[in-house]
Length: 326
Image (cartoon, rainbow, N blue to C red):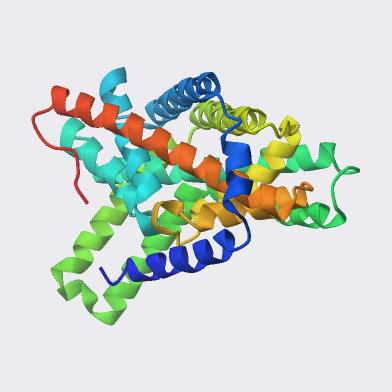
């Protein structure tokens, strides 16, 4: 419970500041413009988005083939927990369900999750940099500075990605030497740590092939293009008519809030702050940026709940064991 308190405080603090900057009329003006048909269209694109995530994990998992709908239920439940639980604790559900339902080792599940998250960062950074460079003459000067920083981090991420197995082996060797020199090898816990670390690194070595990385990158690009496309459709529904490349730049900031260690409860506050910063950079008024942020977040929370419910039903029908409860 104590670990959740900082997330709750961040949520309350950010929501108080953001809500104080807008009126109900600012929110209602944009919200009332969205048609039911537009909502259905975005909801269906979200289905494609989730299927692309499933296909990417299917490429990364090497020990076993998982049936499409069984894997889809895991992806939707994982997505649900990830959206609502603070401090990224929802990530554990993916590893847990793979091990519980399909007997896939925790090390393999963890390795595929880490690789997927690195590719998420690499892909979003790549798309942001590409959009920023294309619009370099039509965006504020400081966007160029942000692009340079993100591009630098992108290069570092790629280096880490391609040498992750080698780095892991080196770290394990150093850890083993440290344990032996300090006498910690007398404790059984140290051997368990080394064993699990080796299993995780072995999974990285198995995954780290050029073909696996190529397909993972392709699916990652499609995943994030579909997410940006949903944001683009939502903008159109609110009557904002924001160009697609501007959506890519503006939405990147709310996406990057997901990597923060202190993530608000259900992303509330942190998501809206990231979105508002991004779209203020794109020339939105303060009221328009904050109001559209709340609408987008509420919509994607609702979508996550609806697909999460479908996932729970599929999981329940296919397996007598319960999905993880947090």
